[in-house]
Length: 324
Image 1 (cartoon, helix red, strand yellow):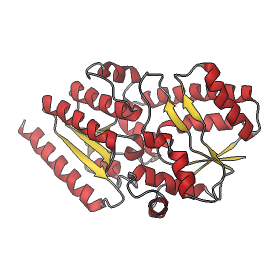
Image 2: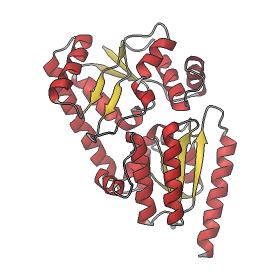
Image 3: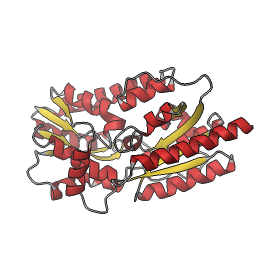
Image 4: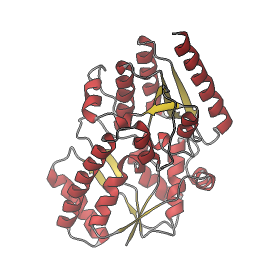
């Protein structure tokens, strides 16, 4: 039995979890192709016009799996951290309904609900749904999910155990090419949702562009969760969205640490939560006099425009450092 996983959205944050879960149930995991113009065009064709580019891309990746999988994973993620009053973007919760309504002829969608704030008895109901769909026992689903959570924790430890930031980026972007930086490179914190930072098509190769300019890149995924949680105390209250909290806390961590020359916030045009995230980062950076820019992405974003902004920002930071 083949389970299709779209190579976007939660793929960049939770692939080890999904892969371990389904393989423990004896399923074969099939991942959609890397993002391309063809995938984006299909996403634009099927998604609603006012959707942000990550949602459009998701539709394109689902279409890419249409003839290749027996089931396609489109989970309703509510909470995977256990934090109260924190969930995922509302569009994540309604993705399965959006995809079903716009794309006919799809294989069955695995749209089970995941909320780690719920009691075990409530979670077992969802496991029973999965068991019925896949033809396995409920107890086997329960064991597989607990094993997958353990695998995800090990993956996070492996990620944080890397000595060089470039090794971490290589794991996250699936780009194993060697990165050669100058002896004293500029260091930039590049913050944003993982499905924007690590998809080189949607961000027009932002990571590799900065590496070619001799810039060392740090991202929120390189910060231990406990350190991020400590930074949360700086804010009057948490945001409502898991990824938004991670971005803000990561930015504050690097701003307070003082080890970065600047901040780049990568955002999707039209993203509601990011309107608040961007302002919070801007205010925090201003207080500590840390230069920052925002790179907004959509299906019309041109590579030349992104490159020009990055080059200008890096040139200003180099001039600033030389003057100091």
